[in-house]
Image 1: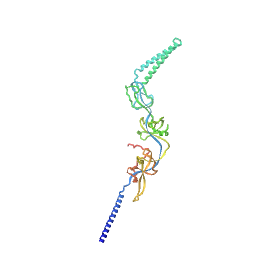
Image 2: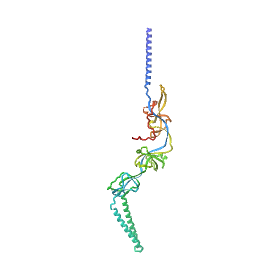
Image 3: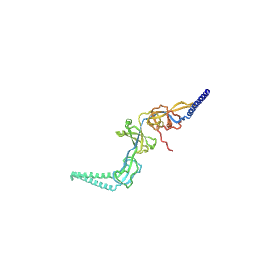
Image 4: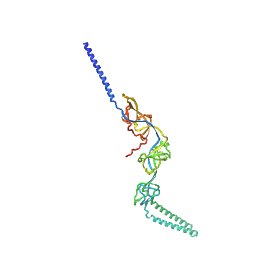
Length: 377
């Protein structure tokens, strides 16, 4: 019995030892298998943070205005007799644009001129008779008054006839004709728009905080969507004498040349005002920043030694940064990273803290402070 018990205990012990060894062996093999199936490094693009010189600028949205602009209208009523302009034509100051029918105005003028001549004859005759003391001074004074009245009637009639001719009040470019020959016009009816478009004004708003950075005569650069990256140079000519109490903005006006008269009043424009000396700032592509409600972050690439096969391993560390001004595709980083640190520029969505990465810069996001629109071929 004792031998049988000893044999049974030995067998149970061996069985237990075998089970323990098998379980340990299985655990080791599972761990090895899992290590072999570890997540492969994520492919990202990255760039080294570097310093650039940025010229401080103020930016604003403005509207182009003509230096002079009116809707040409008649001062007196009448029927359009002749039209002496074409839509879109450039005209000089004083150029005849339209003639209203005079009707009986010339006859009325001739009648008044005849009355003025008679009044002058009577005055001259009584002036000679006064020297001979044939007429009284009172009679001569009446004749003088009649003469002045007749001459005033002639001048008034002549002015009325002159108003029948509509002229350009200043040099500029005409718009689209709004009237036709034979049409009856009331005073104030629009005939055509006249705009002086070289030079042009651009009106824009700036917050009151920057009033100390602007002054009359300061240069500006104006761009419009119609001409891409082309800048039109100008200068500030006026700053409003009051700040809007509702918005705390001040209106500013700049004048700019319009070579080729490409720009037109009413166009939307962006205005850049250069202020102060250039600043040296650490910059990154905008795509490298992950914007969150709790703060802006970047993924910094760091060396993490070597793997089991001796290959270098790189991992990312998510870091909070403080960003500044943005220009084009670039953003200034005020704190959080240092110069020459490698920062992920694309592929952040698949990253977490301590993720292994492989850098592939075959395709890099755009990183220009003054990006240009692609040209259609």
